[in-house]
Length: 329
Image (cartoon, rainbow, N blue to C red; front, side):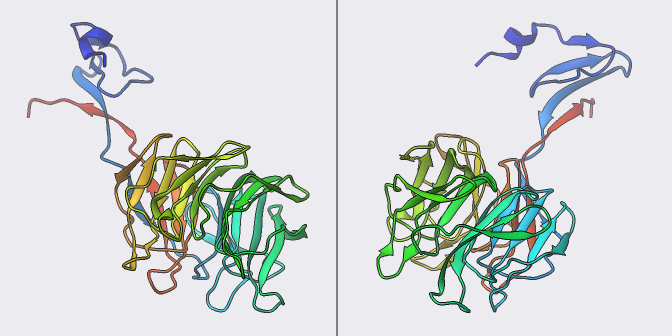
């Protein structure tokens, strides 16, 4: 690693104003203010409490970002079709799903999203294969997926592309089946290496992660989807099920969940750099079966079980740059 001397020279820079884009560790003298300054970062990223959802629920679908989130379905109980939008401050109720359900999955943005599958006790069979598309105003029912299952997961950038994988199919049990959505229909593609259910996930239809899951030894497993097939990559430090995910296939965040063997609802949060997971600051309250969205640097967790059903929202913000003025005290 280059030293300060190698990058900036022996002498401290003298500048009339602070540099536009200083790097961490850079030091300079501001000749206008007559002070020495340096660039650092705040303490490690952390979770803060946001405003509650209007309808507390677990096993719901989540999509979008920290400032433009989407929650759909879930169990209050009973199962609900309620949909809410998050603007980074508060939640607003909008049009319901056409079919109330829980254990459904979701992906996309606040204006272009999908939800698919789940449990619908008002129908027969109870395990749903229905897909609905969100256009920013209302939900429209589209083509069903192929293998009926629940406790699966999925990811995708918007309502025109998604990947669905794993889950529990009766009477087969836990499956590795993967299906791809092209905006019109679902197609079976290459299976997970490890059949599992109740995972966390994040990414796009061509680059995403399947994180944790059940049964053992899947709890800590992470698999990478490259648009064609799955590859095992670095394990979580804390293996778990029913966790949240945010970010991309090379910059991800995993949080909350449950350790089945104990059981114990988790607050643990880990960051993924494309190779390995690193433990960072915990959620304020352990939670499982939540909705989630956002990025590695700005994520959101909402609803879930603590173990009681909750409407709580938490926001993750990564370290941010800070300019420090040096004094003689």
